[in-house]
Length: 185
Image 1 (cartoon, rainbow, N blue to C red):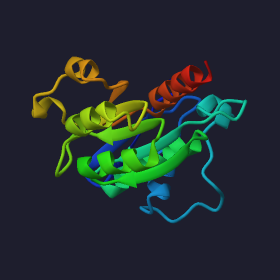
Image 2 (image 1 turned 45 degrees about the horizontal axis):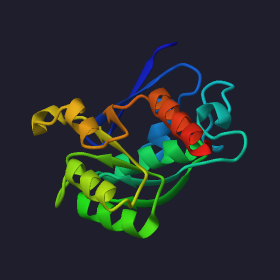
Image 3 (image 1 turned 180 degrees about the vertical axis):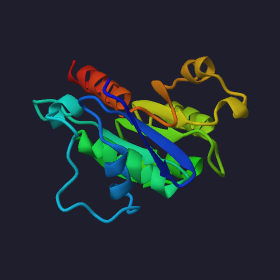
Image 4 (image 1 turned 90 degrees about the vertical axis):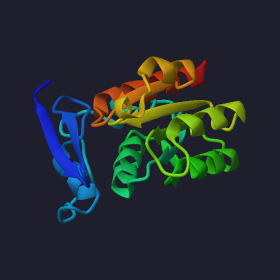
């Protein structure tokens, strides 16, 4: 790892590792409109390709629903996943919307915050998995401990993964790669 980059998005401090396969905080800030738009499309910091970021060479990609009550966070997560070559089929703002959109869109993966209005991410995940509206749910949160939920409980309840905010882009790409591989089998 070369180093870490930090950026404040809304009230959240995001980090990415400065190694191959990551996107810098400067690019994050540009993508959400906090800085003037770049003169060229968003690129990786190094020579890493989209294949290394997550998209498989044979064109396989995941259909992903992203849900977070903070629009800037939802955009950053969706942009990062789309950059890796996967299809963003929808975006939502709360747990109730996540359940409804998953039922309608039938994504391969739902990436969802835990602390949201109307229905939290854990309860939404349970409803989505019981209805078999999505194959996998990846939960993300920076405040899950204050909600009295542990990683182990989330995984026992059916989460395919959990990432703490601020999330590491390389870890997200690694999970996406693994799930694409599982889809290919």
